[in-house]
Image (cartoon, rainbow, N blue to C red; front, side, top):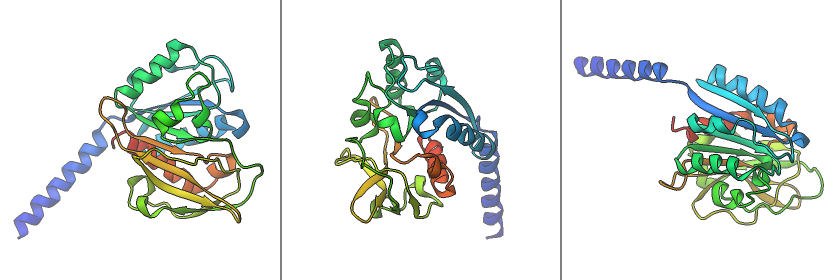
Length: 238
């Protein structure tokens, strides 16, 4: 028994060393949602990922409703793409780079306006993220964010507890059939899904996470940031 314990301890030690020696997860971020201060939020998030989650991040600032996806070439070597853009009318050339990245099975994490992040590829929402964005409710209203029963044991929710959001909820009446609902949010009068994940589909896409939250006040909540950080690592296969 003593020898078995020693062997197990040695194996655990080797596993820990391997984790430390693994190359950092390469994360490429695209920020282009000025209404929600995505530049500031993702800059702070980048720092967190690099300091605490063994990631190497590149943050590309894209013009809100612009015509260029700055840094699209970085997708060729990235493990995960984080998208927080809004109605970018990008060229066919840049969209092709995004689509190649997705088809190669790399991870995707979409935040807030990513559901309508590409004006020239509105299908990104349903085809990749698995949502059905249909505008938002008319005013900010406090909503209680709770963990969905189906997703309570998902790795993205490790260490995440219920919290409150005060930004407008997005309407997503129907999620893709293969989505795992993670979080729902309810006000006094309505409720919506606000975070979900999709497992990889070989030859089509890798792991995908999306949250319709992501206003500046959400990024001030440790529970929300923990979830998105978990999602990046999970999407990257770690």
